Length: 295
Ligand SMILES: Cc1cc2nc3c(=O)[nH]c(=O)nc-3n(C[C@H](O)[C@H](O)[C@H](O)COP(=O)(O)O)c2cc1C
Image (tube, rainbow, N blue to C red; front, side, top):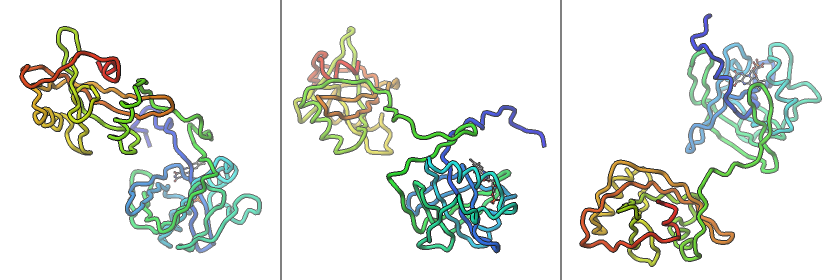
């Protein structure tokens, strides 16, 4: 068969690795699978993508259940065996020195010890997609082990988790009350999402007062999730009786507000604004707190 996709770019995906356990007429079986994905929270659904020549597929088609055992970084030997041999070739699970199992709670297929996650699944959907078959399992029992770290897979090699990568954010040192103000708005959310409007006049940035507090910033609001941010901001500006026309252009400011050890992450979508009237505006000139960094 000729390949329709000329490059091997698809080999550059990074994944985790799971061990899929199943049961057949010859007993339990196990295979390695990197194409394993949670696809729903409620109910918890996991999709696995299994090639047609595997014993695993045949087993699951028969019993309508399978185990997803997400490998930890100590389990490279298990993965190499589960992925390197087919159940048609050897009885992998009976190898004395490789797999350790435990009895499941809700299904009859054995599960593997030493994993980061063990999910017992009932088959709810089967669909042929390309050269693999998608099997969707509804999770009927799940547990995880916080002391284990996942095994990762990239270009045929195994990896462990590296250093956490803190998303690139502009650090803004604020005074205590400003930080507290944003923390209050965030109410424990990891990232506070704001939409604001910035009006520039003669190279100076105009700022205004947040209605009920003393914090000075650009006029901004926190749009509800899923709402169009520009439309929401427009209504907000109207309600505040600011004579500002919001333009189409917008920029993104990813900030981490800091005061001592306290931080709050804030994303600002900032729209450009035109000052239409001078009537009701309580504009002030640029300050050196949050405002300074939004220009
Ligand atoms: C790291 C790794 C990841 C794999 N991922 C998959 C996968 O996602 N889907 C698949 O069908 N086969 C995958 N395989 C190949 C199967 O594990 C392999 O064909 C296995 O022998 C099938 O076993 P079975 O015939 O006993 O079911 C993977 C193999 C390795 C080593």
